[in-house]
Amino acid sequence: MRSSSTFGVHFILRMNKEKNGNAPVYVRINVNGARIEMSLKKSVKTADWNPSKGFAKSKNTELKILNNYLEEVRGQLSSYYREMVLSKKLVTPEAIKNQFLGIQEQENTLLSLIDYHNVQMKEVLAHGTIKNYYTTAKYLKEFVSAQFKKQDIYLTELDYQFITQFEYFLRTYVPTDHHKGMENNGVMKHLERFRKIIRLAVKLGWIEKNPFELFKLKMQKVERGYLTNEELISIEEKSFSLQRIQYAKDLFVFSCYTGIAYIDVMQLTPDNIILGIDGNYWIKTIREKTDTSVNVPILPKAAYIIAKYKDSPRSISKGSLFPMISNQKLNSYLKEVADLCGIKKNLTFHLARHTFATSVTLSNGVPIETVSKMLGHTTIRTTQIYAKVVEQKVSQDMAKLRNLLDNQEMNKVKTLKVVKVS
Image 1 (tube, helix red, strand yellow):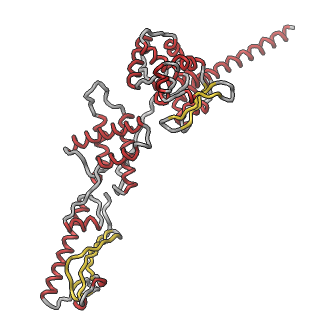
Image 2 (image 1 turned 90 degrees about the vertical axis):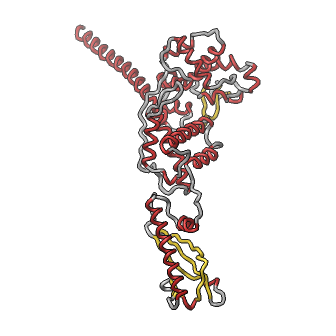
Image 3 (image 1 turned 180 degrees about the vertical axis):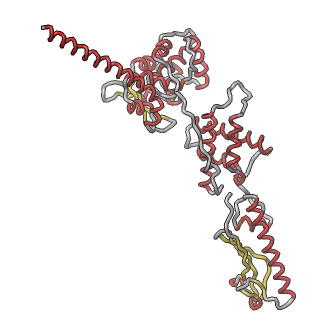
């Protein structure tokens, strides 16, 4: 923490409390422009006080004893100030006063900050997002326990080194279950959430300096996986005798032709289907993650799947287009779909959204601006992660143009030959 640049101790009389010629002695503590006053439970005759020096006039033994006491107080307060500076604690007049009076200051801790953030954000952030914050908090608790051998840590103890040590902890973390260790971007996501929590502490005045100020998050560019047109067709044409597998496959295909994420698919109701100005049916909804409007025309294959499940008793009882299924179960069943279809890629429901953006739309010439709108992206830069597909499309289109121009040149040559012969 940044220490204060100025410190001063001055003794004064409180003349507004003067009685019978005597006034109480107060000490005024100044730290970096801020000040506080404290009663010393002593009094002196106003005639025996030197206001310019801030001490009693040494006329007798009693007044000399008072001055000695005031010097002791000054020494104690100065000692507390130096201790706080050396221990890099936040130095305030109140903190020095509390030290002198023996009052234990209630400092804010890392866990109290995390709890405050999660309570405040619970109604603001999406359920999935707040779950991610809980996971980051879990890792922070484990790190503090392993690194500092205690359950919590004061915010004043956080610094740049704490962040780098936490980063190393995440990179070397070995899960006890079957999951793999974290990749770089997984580590960066936890640090990104931690940084947002720390920013809240700065805004609240719970911490003076942001320890993330000099720390740079380093995300690595990752190619987004998606199904090729051939892989998508192989899934579409495959039928399964097990209803749970067939349902997982149908929901996946539905998302491949609408680009709608899992949580938004589960929340769709018949009211989300509207008749568009083009005379065709559309899905109109709000994306939970970004709270943005999403309007997607219902393509024939998506319409078939809607019709297949809208009259299901489970759909009707819930008032939804599709029966409820957890994301965890859905992704588990999709791994079986991939195995049975001979697809080696990690088939998750979110892969359907990427497939919609690539194989279904961009690869077929749908402009990136239109795709961005249908995906509910808040900025087109998010959609540009699929730019490689756009480049492939441009390459294909230019190849067609090249062939067309080559054919035109060949026709010109043939025409010239005919003219010369005749």
